[in-house]
Image (cartoon, rainbow, N blue to C red; front, side, top):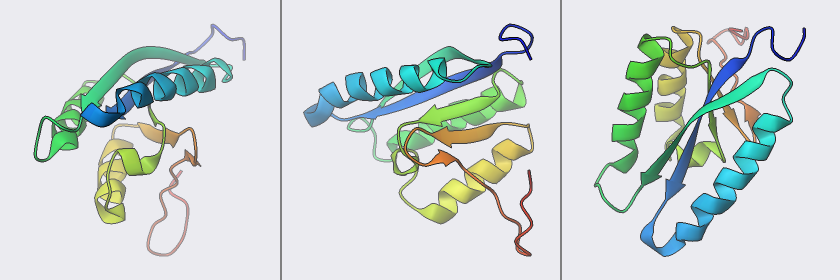
Amino acid sequence: MAKNEYQKRVWALYRISDGLKDSSLVQRKICRQFVTEKDNWSLKKEIEQDVTKYSRPLDLALRFIFEAARKNEFDIILCFAFRFLCRRKYELASFVHSLADYDVVLWSVNEGRYEIFLPNNINRF
């Protein structure tokens, strides 16, 4: 497939806090490089979520992402590490299962693609 035939639309999510503002620059640089290394990926949006502003900070970003997925605005969510999205594994799994209904996949620069397994261990994708 030629690079321009079909570009997967990527949204990147960066998690920052007051004490670690430089970390968003590092995340941004690494995620952008990751996208450029993929033949058919195109970075369309970058979301920076300041986790010091809210008691449940990522809930707002995740709701925004879910609504955009319903509208078919992107194909891939990219983050630096899965733990930056959700601290609890079951919350992350639930979120990814919901995104899968809209053909959206989650990728992490550190862990790769988030794989969803059904209870009988058959890979859903």
